[in-house]
Amino acid sequence: MATSQWWSSESFWRKTAIWVTGGSMVILILLTMDTLPQISAGSKRVPAYSVINHRIEYQLDNTRHVQVPVIGKEEPLFGVKLTEEEAEALVSHGKMTVQAKNCMNCHTLLGNGAYYAPDLTKAWLDQYWGNSDIRETQMVEFIKDPSNKLHNSLNRRMPNLGVTDEEARAVVAFLKWMSAIDTNGFPYNFKSIEQEN
Image (spheres, rainbow, N blue to C red):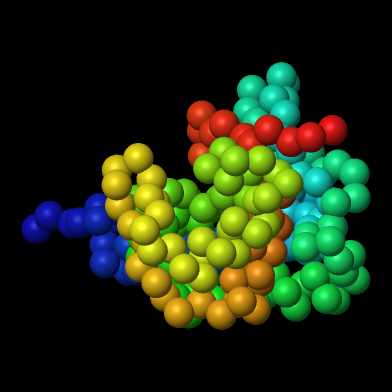
């Protein structure tokens, strides 16, 4: 009568599965605890919400070989400097509006979403808005009523989603804040708007 090897026993593989699952769970918890502070607003790569009170530009980081956001001089959104709490409330309202209007059904945000319409990760700095002097007004007006305006080079148009003036301003704040996030150069080959000094 042949005896089975220890490594082929059901008991060995059951114990191995339990240990591997438990060890993987511990590693996952440790990685989560390490990651959360790095992706929270106010961290090195994700700026505080009050960044919407400053100019945001992109420069090539020669050590990383990617375009990175540079926070510049004070340049408040809509000409009003907000406290950290006010900025957080406005940006959060914009994020909730983007979610409520299902923008990711067509757009991409930080690598998530669809590719039917333009990527919005750096929309605040998109050359489409012409120049920085009229960008805020153009963005609000476009978000509120995108009819008869080309959405991109593919002749796609954005539907009118019934966005209010308050919601449109909040979405612009969210887009400005999001453009300040260091995304390791994503999306690649992005050409930033020309800004006055």
